[in-house]
Image (cartoon, rainbow, N blue to C red; front, side, top):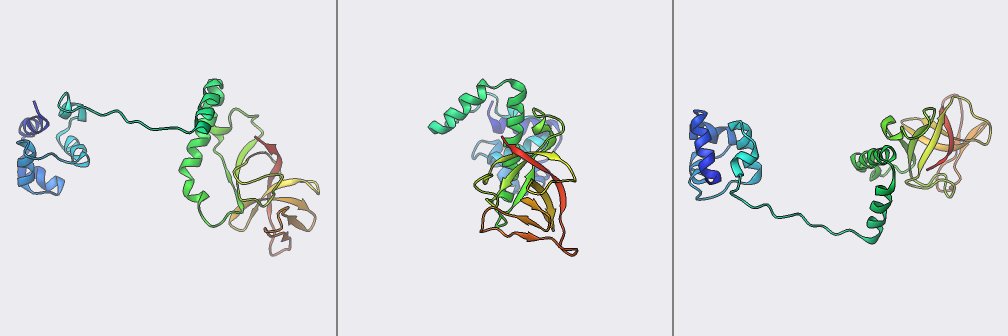
Length: 214
């Protein structure tokens, strides 16, 4: 039985007219007739909508009617090395890495924005392989290069107190930044990034001490 035949059979079983189905899909009644007689085939997007309206899954509509071609893709040598290392890691740490990758992917637009002097917090689940008193952040930009560079994952101990000379995370205006803490300023090691002079008007909240990177 073809996709069109199954579609017609289920539509009639649900007591849905061609006109009603066409209206739900935003197409003409004639198009429904063409699909049901296999004169033409609906797009995959339409098939998904049809299955939702008729209350069936895609397997029912297709069954053995079509053959799905395997999806092939190539990987670079570097990507193969990464996969090899990932498979060698225990399941707990692997899950943490997968969550980090998911975080980076979901935030890819943020990384591509023009503002490249800030730090983004990695969700707690992604850092569960590390001590509970740590938090993980990813660095966007090179304000503290060469010590910390763009894309580094920072290990941070939450604290409200820093000693002079400590590298810390600070909430400044509308973003989180990394700087060296000095009594009257927050200093960037990269001369291209601003050193922030602390005043009563422009102060910064201490979020934690940077202990290193992964």
